[in-house]
Amino acid sequence: MESRQNLYLSYSSDCLCITRHVYLPYLLKIYKYTVSSPCEIPIHHHTIPYHTMPLSSILSQTHYFSDQPITTLLLFFFLFLVASYLFLKPNPRNLPPGPPGLPFFGNLLSLHPDLHTYFAALAQIHGQIFKLRLGSKLAIVITSPTLAREVLKDHDTVFANRDVPVAGRIATYGGTDIVWTPYGPEWRMLRKVCVVKMLSNVTLDSVYDLRRSEVCKMVSYLYDRAGSAVNVGEQVFLAVMNVITSMMWGGEVEGVDRESVGAEFRELVAEMTQLLGKPNVSDFFPGLARFDLQGVEKDMQALVPRFDAIFERMIGERVKVNQKEDRKKKERKDFLQFLLDLKDSEGSDSKTPFTMTHLKALLMDMVVGGTDTSSNTIEFAMAEIMQKAEVMKKVQEELEVVVGKDKMVEESDIHKLHYLEAVMKETLRLHPALPLLVPHSPSESSNVGGYTIPKGSRIFINVWAIHRDPSVWEKPLEFDPTRFLDAKWDFSGNDFSYFPFGSGRRICAGIAMAEKTVLHLLATLIHLFDWTIPQGDKLETEEKFGIVLRKNVPLVAIPTPRFSNPHFYK
Image (cartoon, rainbow, N blue to C red; front, side):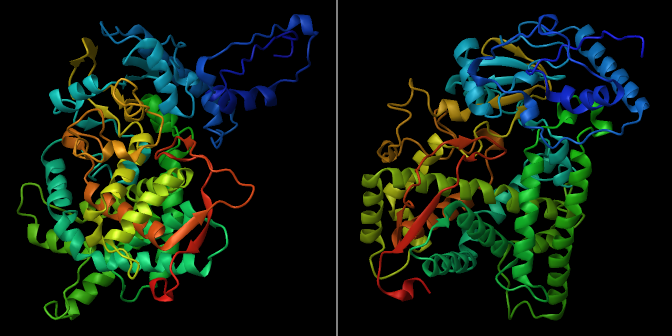
């Protein structure tokens, strides 16, 4: 080692992903370095189109490995095995075009953190269907309504599966939820439980009083802070979280401090969302998953029991109450009771029984999947409305006509608020909560757009780009709710120029709940308050990509009560 005095290192700033976090610490520890004369060190500037950023900027919290030399040797050995597997095996013919990649890493190091805009830019070069090699995974990106129809309708059954990430599988009790369960009898059972039973309009209407109570608490909080700046997104998130948890186990929880449960849940959901949105080496190189190089699996395995402890506590208390209480005298109406009754009625006799594990996984879906999606949509809608005074005026005028100036908005008013509904649809056109949807994965090799799509590929459908396609939408970057005042577009997923909730068998199961929650909260915020931006602040709608699309800069605004009667606010 010591005899190699003149070993030069070429270290490109564009290839920092695993290199920086895995090899660099050892190189710095083992060797002593001096800088040669400038002429001896060639410096190359490589321009990556569309402001490409190294993935290391996302993996900023990667855990270092043990500093034992044997760990490094083992790592190199397994990397060599994976690389050999990748590049010695035959590649399928007739794959879609795509940008060139590096050996082993493929296109992984060139990914931009804002994947939706990066994929849209690549589509301008490589076409409406293109491939990316993300480590050992082949990704196919779809960016047109016609090709989306092929995947989600023409070959719906083939593409009905998911490529389950490590963190997602752990978070949902082994992938036993509605999102990650493979297409088959178990998934059909869960779909029926969610759409036909638990999240049907009839069931949702039965827990309206629980939702309304939480909306009133949000109004009271904002009224107490009238004239002061509030973080709109944060308050809406808390309101949505409370709405969902109240529907899950009711307004009163026997033997449990409900406020403390809510606070604990908010903390856990934030941690869960961060872990689910963190790029994981194990997902790109499944052969390395056993080593959990970033500690994502370990962190998720530590987090899930904290959720499970809350679920067990709530379920246990409810079972005790049910055993000692005359249910005929006091019928409980919340999702937990509904699911417990369903579990008892299904029993173990069914070919596909509904188990306690399924119950917990569905509760996890609701609390994690239903909060950020709804609250971020409301925050984007508020920002877009506040940017256009004429839109705010139209919304408030419609509310005054339909609701009146002498009462709060009720959910029964929502179906009459056609312009407000158009505002929600236009918000989801420009800012779909899941800009790439949840990736699909074909159960067998298929053909899309004349290209071969191998079994097990990860299929991204860039609904964000489709919603901004100038060949489909007039002035696509302009926020214009009037384009949705006719009945052409809805949330059914049948029109592949507009499908913010997905389409086909895997369309979102919670559309009805999301629509009720978003419209009721949004209508309440605009009906009861005027909103202004603090002096010196700038109102913007720039996005930040993540597991859920969010505003890059949180919306901070000042609420002013519109009506003098304090009864509306307390």
